[in-house]
Amino acid sequence: MGRLGEVCYPCRRRSVWCGVATCVVGVVACIFLVALVVYLMFRPNLLHATAVDADLSTFSLALKAWTLTYNLSVGMDLSRRRARLVLHYHAVAADAYYQDQRFAHARLPDFSQPASTNVTRLQPSFHGHHQLQGGVAAAAFRREDTEGTFSINVMVVAKTEIQALALRLPGPHMKLDCPLRLQRWNASSSQPLVFHPTACYVSY
Ligand SMILES: *[C@@H]1O[C@H](CO)[C@@H](O)[C@H](O)[C@H]1NC(C)=O
Ligand SMILES: *[C@@H]1O[C@H](CO)[C@@H](O)[C@H](O)[C@H]1NC(C)=O
Ligand SMILES: *[C@@H]1O[C@H](CO)[C@@H](O)[C@H](O)[C@H]1NC(C)=O
Image 1 (cartoon, rainbow, N blue to C red):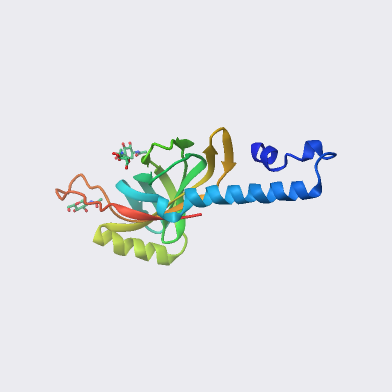
Image 2 (tube, rainbow, N blue to C red):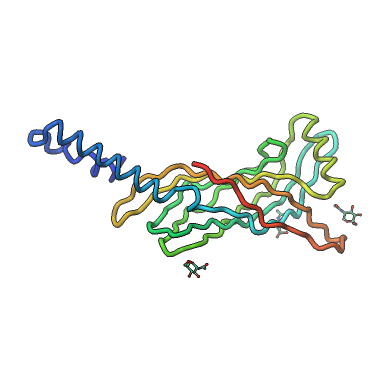
């Protein structure tokens, strides 16, 4: 609770002077204030996320072992419209999914969005190996491999804190889900890569 606790329970230290009614009114007012701030900050139309570029330089599946080798980076723009308060993001993490299987995880640095910031760029990148489970995913991989375009979901989660003046209030957990269609980079191919900026789903 920390600072929020001090604000919401001012009566704890002065319990002799503080009637139960005062405490209840204080707590209710405090809950209302938090709810109002959260509502003002997080009306879904206020926060938008778009995947603006992506680089899939390695994405291959070893036969039989079904080991996926990947090297993927994504640029995501997180924008707020008519932002009035500072927003802090922490415990930021990104996960990449192929065929509903999580194959990669990455931590991202904490960041803040001052009230005047419209857009913040996130740049999750993943590389390594992962064992795919089941033949369905492997079959989907072979199909997409011949098409040359892969369906990969990148999700970002973060905890938020809303700063109003000197006060930091815990905000909701944020979750972005970006369903991407990615072409693999191929040095021997003369065709340029096309990436269509993709809107991500924002939820709390
Ligand atoms: C991943 O791809 C990027 C861009 O193509 C490259 O700079 C980087 O070295 C690659 N990383 C690994 C581990 O292969
Ligand atoms: C941010 O929003 C303000 C007001 O809408 C606008 O004037 C400014 O150009 C925007 N900045 C960027 C970097 O988009
Ligand atoms: C790269 O493109 C060439 C020509 O289009 C193709 O023959 C080759 O298999 C591709 N390589 C990979 C790794 O996709």
